[in-house]
Image (cartoon, helix red, strand yellow):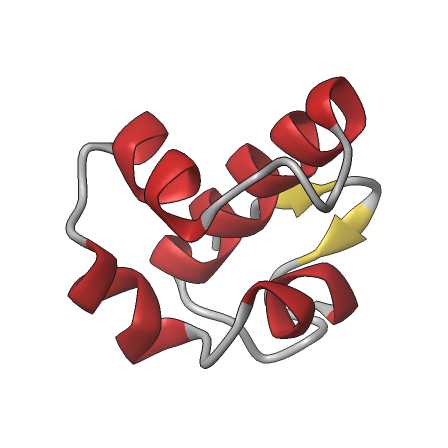
Length: 68
């Protein structure tokens, strides 16, 4: 069984989906590069080629992504 490693944490270990792992990874890179305040949910969704609605189905806020 294949497991994604996101920032050194197994996505399966935290009960996340593949999409959640991709969102966490992309958001993490953007947060490090630009800072939490400057990164918008539109930026995260755009980087992944998904809609904001899809992102919000997985996470209710930017802070929830950061906590994950």
